[in-house]
Image (cartoon, rainbow, N blue to C red; front, top):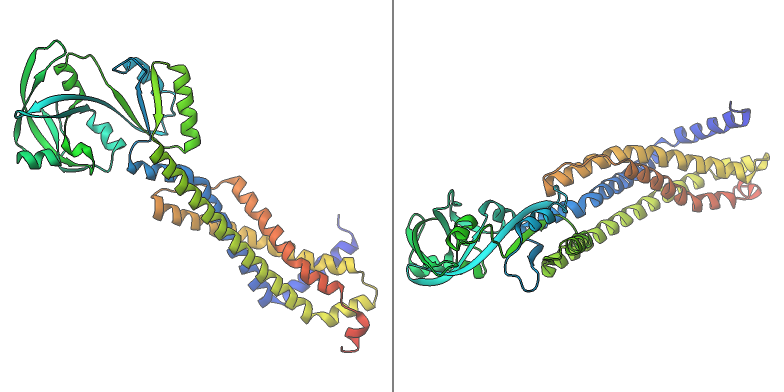
Length: 380
């Protein structure tokens, strides 16, 4: 149960809050805005690495698996087992590749066998005029080759060469689409990997497995180390240029979030401190009178700190609600995904709101403690 002193303290505190409604409202809104920005930024900050990692996947794969030294092709079973070491929710795509030198309409060129559905996950930047091949009798043709040979979608080409046993083969294939990559692939011809393996007498043969993993550089390095240790016949390699770019972008975004949050909290502290200082100056005579009748500095401090504590808790709670909807709007507009309420972020926001508000009250409280009753009562 509360004692008489506690009841009197709460009455004085509520009276102080009600007598200066406009100033209290301004301070409350300042704390709420600061807490809202803090809650929103921390919620978005928590999801930035994962969501930005998925956005960065539009720039291509960030890991490849190649055969160990002395081998030409990857072991299909080992590749399948290695892919299981990467969580399914992080593995966006895995495209196998095999390259052979064949001829198209007597024109020598590189033929690449792959899985077209997976390629569009690992290389979403490809621009295709037409459509993806629907069966093994259809192909994609690089833009440079198509321009040089005056070919277009729907045309039929002759693909010829020698298989693994030196036997010649020749077949007709239809161009399903023209692909533009902006790289050397514009000079390639792309066929389904099973067809190329059949032509070359290779059973599930692949030279490279290209992976697109939604993970940062440190996590990717862990996957690389684990696969390398468990599957010595495979050599996992990180595409340093892409993974480094991701890390740089994420670091800058996280720095920006921290900087904005720090500035907003500083402005919140200044606003609350200014409001509380104005309250102290307006109540100089009241504070002086209380001291004159025997009130101790501790009671004056408790009253102002209690006011700051109420502002911090109330503003923090209001800010958490506003901040969640702010984070939701940002996530939807930038990443097209929702965010969930994180209890730890909510608790941290409330705690920081209270800490910032209490710190903002220190200077006004110090000013209140320095008030001399005799001087104030004489009107000085």
